[in-house]
Length: 373
Image (tube, rainbow, N blue to C red; front, side, top):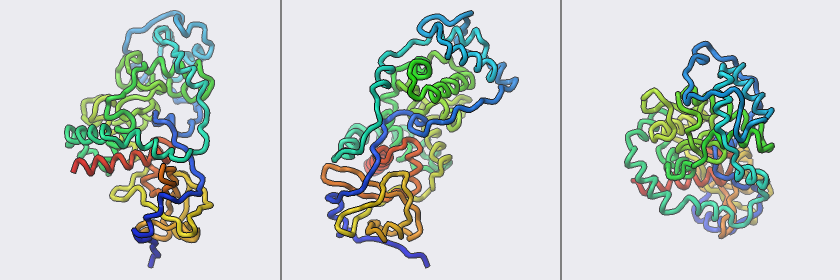
């Protein structure tokens, strides 16, 4: 028989006043791949004959690159690699990159950006307030009502509840209201060739963006998104698009700026990363030994419920003793909150490597569901 642990609601009352564990600050909202570990730069496979013969939109052609990116050796090498490995015509890419514009604001922002320090007291409350407000909840309910059929189909196909699909799109773009105004071509070209920080990563994303544009038969100078190149209602980076975007409305194209494909793609992303249908996401926890915790916290931690119990940390609910969970600390204004992240919580962090982000998605999802029903 499996041992189970739980704590009564009465013991939970003092939870918000407890503090003591280390934690990890939230990543800023942005693109899926921008929050994950930087992928290794690998050699792409050679194109098939069918890929090489795909029509290229925009009609670009030039003998040399002109404009903001004229005379960039790294860009010249990139063009040569795209031609050799993926069959893009040199003249087409030279003409396309002659249209690319350097984003000075992005360069300055990336230079100033530094790694965040430890989370400050009340940081969770301030972060939460950005997304758990009347606007996000009301628009989420309205979006659900307008796309109920599509959300139901996606939930049935991928096993992901509609409210969590909405939680992602709410945090990312307020259901399409904030899609970003930067041309993806400009954003990725700037970050690949004018910003040393993570240049390899953004060069790979630029490669994937061109492959995406060819695959979907779109002019690569047209799509707009975030300053980092994230696209659509769910803010997919190009590499994520190629891996997990789906044509959910069956019109022959993957268009993440349209609700149906965005809904299906977010659900597919969760399913591909191990979402467990019918299971929970988080459960609150309490500290039983004087309100102090010496264990490391964060979405990446892994403890059994029994191990946490030996350290005086108990779930407010029933969990199997051998169940693996992450120990989370949220620095609220009223005091630190402690939670246990279940496997589905970790899946949400695959979208953004941040405890605060995943918890905001969870709480927004629950708020939308409560209002909708």
